[in-house]
Length: 64
Ligand SMILES: [Zn+2]
Image (cartoon, rainbow, N blue to C red; front, side):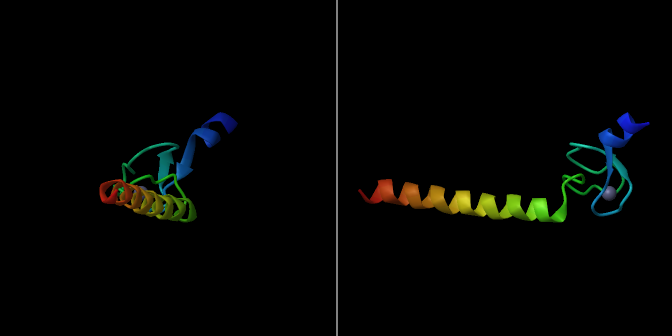
């Protein structure tokens, strides 16, 4: 069925079937298994940028 096809995807690590949006792979325990490597890399980079900006802003307010 097409419906089942859209609800599941393969884990980026073990390639086994996992539900889309699953936070952890039930087979190998990888976090965000439905998220592609590229996508997770973008998330990591943006998280670092956000943290950097936050610390910069906090430092700015502390200095003034
Ligand atoms: Zn897996």
